[in-house]
Amino acid sequence: MIRKTGCATAQILALLCTSRMGLFETCQIPQANYLGAFADGCTPVTAEPAATSTTAVWQPTAGSSWQIVLEYPLNSTSYDAPVYDIDMFDNPISTIEELHNLGRKVICYFSAGSYEDWRPDAKNFTKSDYGDALDGWPGEYWVNTKSENVRNIMTARLQLAKSKGCDGVDPDNVDAYNNKNGLGLTKADAVDYVTFLANGATALGMSVGLKNAGEIINNVLPLMQWSVNEQCEQYDECDTFQPFIENGKPVFHIEYPDSAPNVTPAQKATYCDDKTVAGFSTILKDMDLSDWIDAC
Image (cartoon, rainbow, N blue to C red; front, side):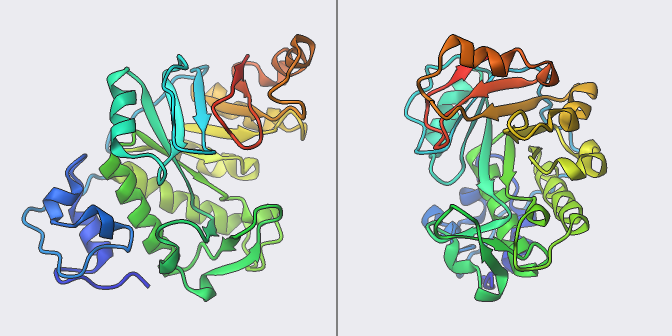
């Protein structure tokens, strides 16, 4: 469980400490201890009111070009795109500041629906929080998104994203209902959890997108600023994501050619000329999501 601090519970403190880049100074929390869910003995010296769900957040336009790199910390900002999606944990504030100085917006990725045993806050999960393993992803397990402890951890992650200056968040693995999750999680549970994440992000002034989870689009579209979709062409489901485009919101779309990074013009055309992705921000990537990219 997220432990109590000397000044408040971590959840209460998270609501108080909402300055954009000054979280650790405002709350006197050493950054190294933040991921332990907040250091013992914290004494907040100021308290800013939490933003409300009506706070204006960044809304990218449909068709915006983008780059996503998750395999390792971003090591090059040379790719010319106004939107970058990068790992929240792996990238320091300086990387986000560099992207901002180049006029780019930064989406910070984290897994909201799974336990990953290598993350710095992994110790805050309990055995009862997670269920079956994610197929093909060693060390990763579906988590019980109804768990108060899991939601407290995700609140802390949203606070970390805010403190780093992320413009938006990309919470992954919210579609447990489509997988053997071992926890009995349903679409209704996903709608409730995505709503929780969206409210938490926008209350901190950050945008939020829906990762895959096409079956719940109609339930959560008003709360989302974009979609991040993987492989809708491969699975013949791109029409499902068109409501984002119809509402002026981008679909940041990835396909993973088997031959990547060696993709011929003819192969690229099969993805980029597909009418079902009209208006999407389609890129071709390798499955590891390195910095290699071939955009439509």
